[in-house]
Image (tube, rainbow, N blue to C red; front, side):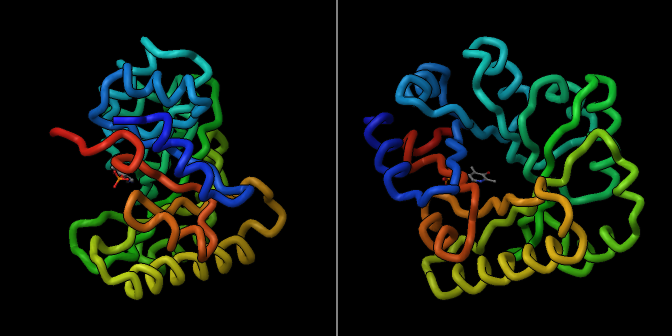
Length: 222
Ligand SMILES: *Cc1c(COP(=O)(O)O)cnc(C)c1O
């Protein structure tokens, strides 16, 4: 596996302003270091325990993004160091992150996950659930989180037209929320969408953060 070559390939396709989260879940420290030595600093993980073990043994200037499904009892382990949490899909989780961030005297950047795929299995708020959350205003009292944008996953399909439609709907929704609730807040700027098989489609409609794993590190063995 030529990790450095794969990484540089992906980076060369990203327009200015689009950042890469190199998804290193299930890959060993050696693989992460190879990407690190090629200049990559943002890595994505989907298990808190695995991410925390890696954070302890790898260089301290790595920015760890949590992209997995959250369990509230695990948040405390990553609160001291996590750079961004992507997959938040309830107000309750936001409250728990806020509480743990306060204990660590931090403000944790968060992205709300929106359900755009056709599969039942992908987590996330519906557009209306998300609108309701913002309309209720109680989120504004959570002073130890910073809502920096939205995240979504398209249906796992070869139908590029469908993927494009789903990403487009999220991009439009992102603009609506930004305009309605964050017009004065420049922190709300990230749209996390696109993985190995669909990041080019995601970039074409406004993604600012792509989460690419297997295209860089190879297939995962679970
Ligand atoms: C694993 C994962 C990725 C990376 O997937 P690849 O297909 O390997 O690029 C991106 N986003 C999330 C939420 C993931 O769980």
